[in-house]
Length: 178
Image 1 (cartoon, helix red, strand yellow):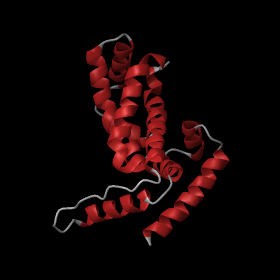
Image 2 (tube, helix red, strand yellow; image 1 turned 90 degrees about the vertical axis):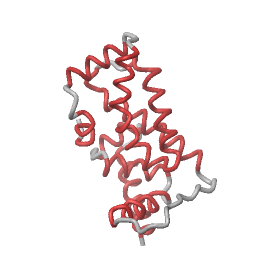
Image 3 (cartoon, rainbow, N blue to C red; image 1 turned 60 degrees about the vertical axis):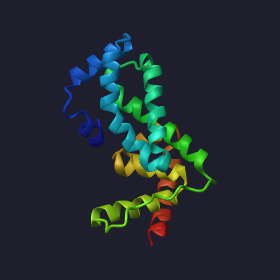
Image 4 (cartoon, helix red, strand yellow; image 1 turned 180 degrees about the vertical axis):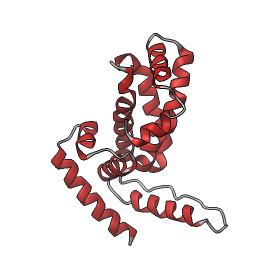
């Protein structure tokens, strides 16, 4: 389990999570609802930086996919890894749909933003200038803390491709940041 996964599971005993997964797989809608509630912030954290303004829609689609295919999950212990793959796929799909279309500008209130919000805004702006393939590798590697091998497994691409995308993504991010 990655550090990010631990954050979302800290208030949940692994046995309780396993019980929720098993209940959801049996068709228990209350267990499914609680499970989706646990997964929602985790999925949003993956979809947001990749799908940008479409992040909430991508997260919703990812959660729908989890709901529809929960019976395919073979081991409750693999829950977060399985969900990560679904969220990454949906985020990239939404980001690719948006490419070439103008982004809707974020409207800020007429007030000075605190320094941390300014930094977050600058990071979001720089990420928004990257290709979806670059945003997803940066998000999985640096936000989720996955190794290059794990990123390759999530995205279903060779490790060498992950390395080259990370290299280009970091270069593009630096250029966008300047």
